[in-house]
Picture 1: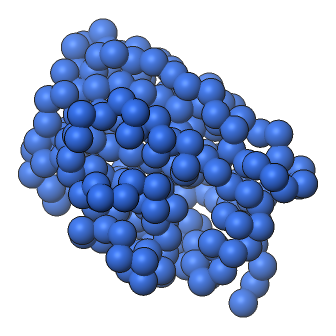
Picture 2 (picture 1 turned 90 degrees about the vertical axis):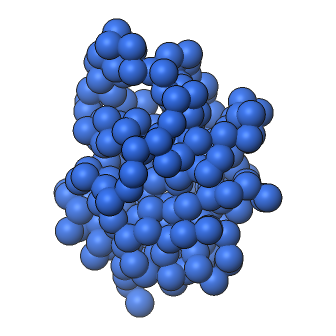
Length: 206
């Protein structure tokens, strides 16, 4: 089993690379990265969702991975979608998700309109991963008033055009209550990214 770290993940270029890296990393992801690096962004993002939501269920966790966000949403109805089956298999062992969905959020999803009461995400909108092109499809599968709480790396927010895309969606009356939160990504560990901060996009579907 190869050892991977954040820098390996940041070098991903497209969905095929993501499947390969995360497929090989899945069995040790929680221990080598989440625990080993003090990865607390999922906890912080879930806390924001909980504080702002009026139940807003079911929740769609995009880029669900091994279920690190869902671990901090006890008692909530959550479905997880991820591009990597091996990561979803690890999440299955935790019994966190109502449904585990293998899929690419950059493609049309086999989901009905107005299915979800909210969307949450941690670690998906980052270097080499998913950009804002998925937002329109996420909005489609959510009902009016759905809460979106999605973490992003600030540099990616700028370089991949999240700001302009969110502005367009807001100007067209598709989303409202747009705001942002600044969060720590890591805690209690010494590594080159220990001081990195995350930007959380918060909004609702109109």
